[in-house]
Amino acid sequence: MAEITKEELRQPENLIYKKTDLLTDKALSYCPGCGHGTAHRIVMEVLDEMGIQDQTIGIAPVGCSVLAYEFMNIDMQQAAHGRAPAVATAVKRLYPEKFVFTYQGDGDLAAIGTAETIHACNRGENIVIIFINNGIYGMTGGQMAPTTLPGMKSSTSPYGRDVATMGNPLKITELIAQLPGTIYVTRQAVHTPANVRKTKKAVRKAFENQKLNKGLSFVEIVSNCNSGWKMTPRQSNEWMVDNMFPFYPLGDIKVND
Amino acid sequence: MKGNEAFAEAAIRAGADGYFGYPITPQSEVMEYLMAEKPHERTGMIVLQAESEIAAINMVYGGAACGKRVLTSSSSPGVSLKQEGISYIAGAELPCVILNVARGGPGLGTIQPAQSDYFQSTKGGGHGDYKMLVLAPSSVQEMADFAGLGFELAFKYRNPVLILSDGAIGQMMEKVELDEQRPRFTDEEIKNNTPWATTGKTKDRERNIITSLDLDSYKQELHNLDLQAKYREMEKNETRYEAISCDDAEYLIVAYGTSARLSQKAVDLLRAEGIKVGLLRPITLFPFPTAVIAKLADQVKGILTVEMSAGQMIEDVRLAVGCRVKVEHFGRMGGIIPSPTEIVDAMHKKIIGG
Image (cartoon, rainbow over all chains, first blue to last red):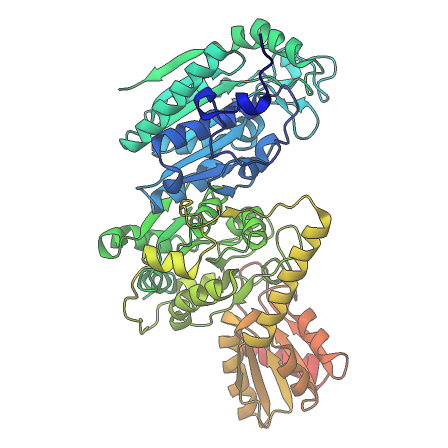
């Protein structure tokens, strides 16, 4: 069989997948193996497929994804730590016809921003919240997060999280599902192609809900943090399946259609 | 109208798009008035009671980043909670109006009026090298006037404007003349006048990013230098003050807000005694009227500053005067308002006979 050159391969008819234009060409600042890049891609693909780039305003958090605006080719605001749901509330109230979402990690959303999260959800703000839960503070070097599992080691729980003195991990997603203002609450993952497809479907549903003015949609993505967990990417994904998923089970928690 | 109500009505008429607040005495009438007035039906203005002062100031951040006219109001302990957000707003260079109807502190302090937030208002308050443009009303009329002026200056400089009032001005009732209703910004005006605003990335422009973050120290220093240049520009263009009976003054009182009203009475009493006293009332606390005070220092024999605090503005007065004449402080704290006769006594004891 004749050798196929790269030039021959790069023909339009051979193109089966391309990076969405809603992701910039800037190299991601995330560690190799981290789930953030996939989550970014999913959200941007959904906005691209819905054709709403020019109507969308994203709110970046403080944490690993503080620089999300470097990678997402949409108008974005960078919020103070934990305050993204309050920021998004005002943006959506002032521009009710536009699409507004926050992209937040567990420290941002479930610790310092607990009040903003719960009250934006309880008011039923017509926004989308994307919540990346990797059970650790990645940006600051692997400290214990509100979602760190019992017994899990981190730089501030070096002997494992002792719930007697350090408190219990917070299942904030189950908590906000109780609130009348939330319309769609789901927990997904992005470690396998099948899960990527499910997550993309969930994110699409969340933005479709916003389009129909139905209320607040909340998509948690349980993710790995191989550097913070001190594992290889593969080990971290296996550890996530074995330890995170039993505590944070995947699937829809609330669907009000 | 009450000062707080006049401010609220003036904000609607200034074409405000959104108010975000949290109840605290003695400024709750601002949100109460707005809620009762249903500005959404009048102009489309949004009024939202937030879950905290922190949420409210971050809502202001979000709205300001969209090119909208947004504001919040609070009183001293609540304004302390807002400081993080104010620092972000200053860092991201966003326009907004913040009203502080100040009360006595520290801590929960008292609900009675005070002027002990001068340092917080003019020297930073939050983290980082930043300045707010600070307006100090001394009447209900100025409470109303400064809502519109505040937005004008905020958008002119892409900077937060603080209106530093106090519980006396907020609660007192006076006659007030209000401006006609100004229209809210149209989408077209926002696109043209605030091209940096996040309104959705259209094909004809690059994406807009609102952030105060730059991890590159060199670029962060350049950003800081730009901010400082802007503050110098404010000092050049926006210094406001009122000079009362200063032309022939041999002694001077420097006071703002409620203290200025009381000091004006004290000036009358002292002049009735035959003592030529003038009053310099700073209207902007940043930029501070340094030049005019420096000039008056060559003319007068002594200066008394009157503040409802332990003496905060006096530091800026002394910097302006530079030890050429005696500068002393008189004030009451804890929510107590000094009487004009107390001010007269202080002038005699600390300046004229001191």
